[in-house]
Image (cartoon, rainbow, N blue to C red; front, top):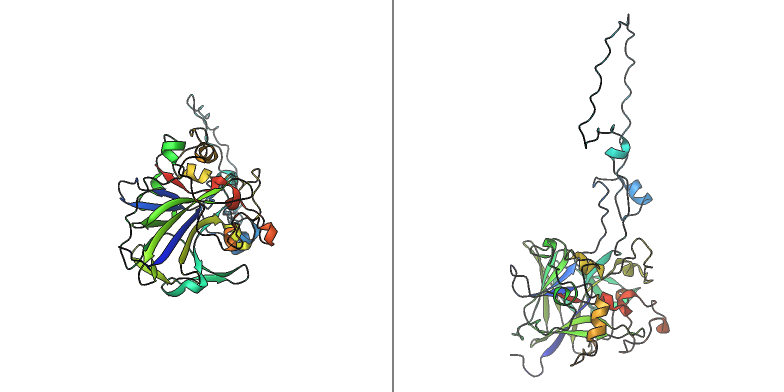
Length: 373
């Protein structure tokens, strides 16, 4: 059991992440980080040139036009044209069928038709620079200009575990205060096969075998407190190992306490534009302006028409439930998460401190974590 004086560890989950302990083929608690990257289903997936890629949006691939046919030598002149018998009449197509149209470029090559969608997101694992000890096959990046003091790695198909030197409390999600996508919001929603083993639709899956797991509120001046999740662990030797696998390949990062004496780690799924220092919310009329919570619907084939509660409806019903959901213990965030924080006060506007403008993840409840079933 953890002893007095052990190092506290907090793993903070933020953005589009779904927690579950209900997958029969993969027992235990997991946090599924969905991959949110738009792929135009109308465009043929073929290689395209660099020039075309530069000319058109990377939201979809442009299929290049076919090469012109090789010129052929002129046909020899005919000595004599002989009368030919009239061809037989063309039979009419059977009832309820249509004759096949002549092949044309329009039918042989697909034309891009961009559909409305959720803006692309990026999955990240972040921690303070001062906590870094070492890594094995998993070199973190840094952004000293826009995100000083933090390192990060992009997540892409990893299966992640947080390991300490002592046993911690066995994880239970039974009393987790997050919207339940099936039991509360969408009664018929089952997880799509892409979010079941081997999780082809996930950017990452976090296995949560140990630790106390609780929902927490990230405050906002807009009155819509986003719900994140915190996993509390302890370590006696003051170290945390973040281990990951992709197939048979393994990698890890080892961390030590920061200046506050705690080890903080963030797993995030936020708009990719944040990495470019672009925080303006997308208008809902934009092609990529579909509200982010539709990602959860897509994970189970649900729609607004098949769900009886939106996430915001759920919050309106449950925000005064007791015991109340506490504020998150993590109060300082990297700028790239677009989350408001200053001097341990998460409710102060980012604009007031000269930082990025308020973003969907900092004030929109519908970017909260959820759970299934």
